[in-house]
Picture 1 (cartoon, rainbow, N blue to C red):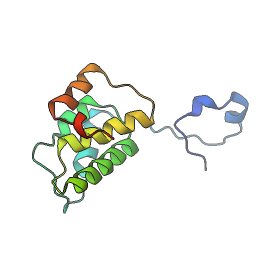
Picture 2: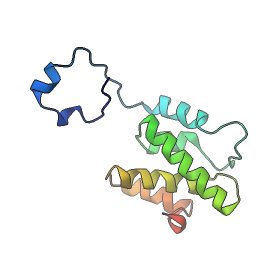
Picture 3: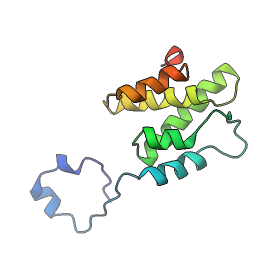
Length: 122
């Protein structure tokens, strides 16, 4: 079993030797919102300022990246001994974008500013 999101990095001869290929496309906005809604356990203290709709609409991310960003946000909130807020999650997202070497669009950066997330960026 081989799993990758970088299939284009493999040459055609290698790909011909793979018997079965399953494509898992990036989740659309509706699925991303569902992922954001379910990523935190019920017992997690999530602030009312967290908008899964804004997160899903503003950031095209894989399920794994959403999970990683949520986990990083939870850690940041734990350090501050506070609820998981939008600023914590946005910092997690910014860190995921850096790991993926993706740049944020101006409207995404504006969200960081709006929620004072830039002050706690990793």
